[in-house]
Length: 174
Ligand SMILES: Cc1cc2nc3c(=O)[nH]c(=O)nc-3n(C[C@H](O)[C@H](O)[C@H](O)COP(=O)(O)OP(=O)(O)OC[C@H]3O[C@@H](n4cnc5c(N)ncnc54)[C@H](O)[C@@H]3O)c2cc1C
Image (cartoon, rainbow, N blue to C red; front, side):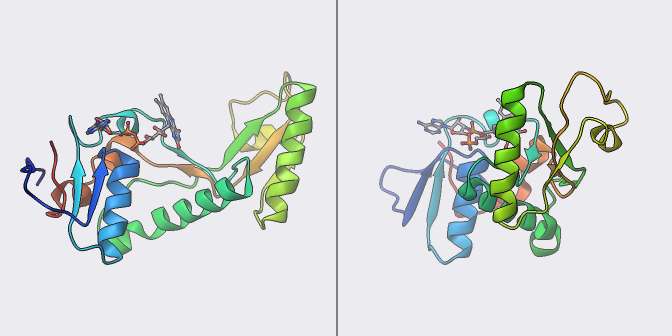
């Protein structure tokens, strides 16, 4: 459980902030062998931006690094329940990034080329093809967009409020 850390306590790693970044970073550090990990949280774990996000998780990043991070995250969320017994509610619903202007389409197609070079199975859907990914999408008023079927979303509050993170005895809050 989260507890107050005394000023004399020592740690091998101190993480400030128990949102999704600090929470998971501390968990992975402990898993990878860092002995005493302390997370300092001034309010309530998971109640910052992490508990308010839409929860979209996508490998359709804008740089090779964010593509790699997105893929890593999706791979992790897929095996989280089996590995940890907790669930962030990840669902692979696909993700369409629509282009509306000339510039959107130009930069979107450029982004898709970069992502495909990174090995991502993303593709560009025309305006006529895009509505097949969403029943509420009209074929008019846009230029199609990039689509990846394996992108999706988590359920932010449970993910940020993950019992595994909250009950880890190596964490402390302040
Ligand atoms: C409306 C909205 C929608 C979003 N949708 C998405 C989305 O769909 N997909 C996506 O990937 N991202 C989305 N984001 C962005 C995402 O929520 C953030 O990038 C992510 O939650 C940041 O995590 P964090 O752990 O860095 O921050 P936070 O969750 O805000 O955690 C930071 C924590 O640090 C604590 N803290 C700060 N300073 C101190 C201090 N000095 N001492 C102790 N504790 C401190 C805070 O109390 C807080 O608990 C969205 C954000 C918002 C606001």
